[in-house]
Image (tube, rainbow, N blue to C red):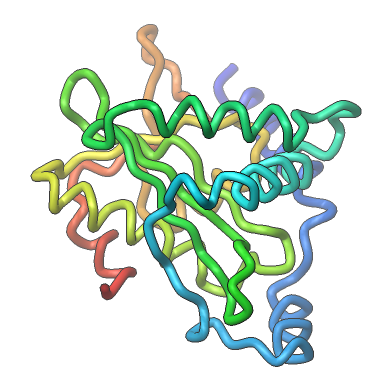
Length: 202
C-alpha cells in the first residue's frame, strides 16, 4: 500500500512540475536580463513591502498550483499580510529576495511554533528564478535566524503533490510520519539546522 501511495505522489508531483522551467533555461534567461545570482539581496520584510509581497505571493502560489482556476488574489494576500504584521515580531519573521532593480522575486516566512520549535511556513520563488540556488539562500536564511533564536529544529508541511518537496529532500529534510506511522509525503523536518544555515552567509 505504501509503495502505491509513493508512486501516486510521484506521478502527481511530476504533473505539477510540468510547467517549471529547466535550470539551463533559467540560467540563460537570467544572463539575458543582465542579472547574476550574486546580485540578489536577501533582507527582512517590512510593512512597506506588503503591496509587492502580496503580488509576489499571489503570483508564485498560482504558478505552483496552476490547475486551480481561481487562485487567491493579490488583494486577499495583502489583507493576510496586513494581519500578519499585526502579530508580535518575536513569533514570526519573513525574508524577501530582491533583484538588482529592487523587484521582489521570492520570500520565505518562518514561525515559532507553540512548542518552541521552528516552522518554515512559506517559501516561494518566481518560476524564472527557480533552480538557480536562490531557494538554498532563502531556506538558509530562515535556518540562520532560527539558530539566532536558539532554535535548532525546523519543520515544513506542504501539499504532497508540490514539486518543492523534492527541494526539501535535496536540502536534507527528513520525511515526517502521521500518528498512525505512515509517511507524510508533504512533511519534512530538520533536527539540526547548522548545516542548512551554511547556505546563507550574512
